[in-house]
Image 1 (spheres, rainbow, N blue to C red):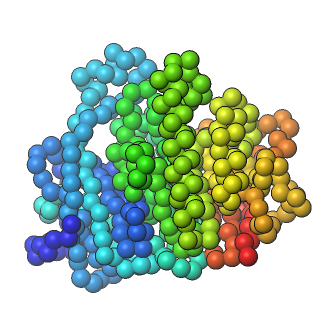
Image 2 (image 1 turned 135 degrees about the vertical axis):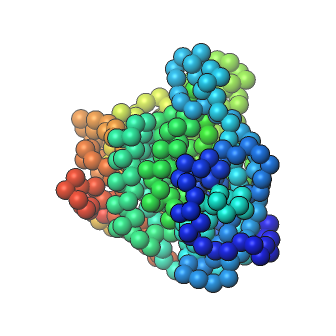
Length: 441
């Protein structure tokens, strides 16, 4: 909803005049895509103010221009401050916290434009700091960042997420968004971990739109807050809102959930098994519909549990189950790229019907697509490194454990998609670790 409220004056000094510890100020702020990525944005933030109040976002073009004011909705929610294995501690009154989840959609924006914004409840002392976002482009080339699995719990682990994400943004300052394929925190039910994720990632989160897929560490024991922290565009298949799609340039991105476990999908309890398999089949139906009606040239899938990777989860029962369910669908729909997580190694494949596309070697840095899908896993943006397979799986072109954080800068043009993967160097800067370009004529 757009309001013409004359008492709002765009001034980033608002934040400086208020105490940083002010419990009425927004925190855990995120920006996500709405249905129309070129002209709309979704905003989410938390506040500790449980009194009735507005959810307000003030926006203008970066550097000046007329301000616009948008309002949305707020709801009081509850969660757990910390994660404990013992339910007695996890569910103790002292660990249960209440907060307000605020959501606003801004509409009528200009495509391919940088905006600045702040959010709050309309009271000067409660405004957030000024942050930025870019609207999407409807045509032409663009770049975005791809990372996965910070899976952090401690300050030292979140510091690695900060370093990796900041290095990535410095390398791609014009990136349109950041794609995160799950396990953003170690325990999705811990609000203290979510707070640290946003705090340590502030340099990037206050600048880029987030496109995230849910991971298994977001769906741990007890409640998880993944769906509260991000306002995704959702779907019309009665699936969670974190199953969603968005268009950018000449590409369509589709985020899937692999949260159902092998035990659930093969449970002897008919109700559990039926619900889990229906959840997966509904996503496949949705994916087919999104792809078949897609007017864009490129189809890109984001998911957490990689179906083609090496190391710890290369050929587990769960991996094979998802591979058998999803790989034939990706072939049928001619999905161009699958951005994966879960397996903390570097993996790249170019496959059709489970085999490397003919004529493409491990040394090849490019290929022309007639059929096949690129599968990419970029290790971790955190501290946990999985041991690489003793023998590289035959379906992978590249497989390694670089023992450092990785990120990818992916450029999408009308005729090619380029995957540049970088290693974060302790000496400073980034090292180009791998490159591959997929041409589609």
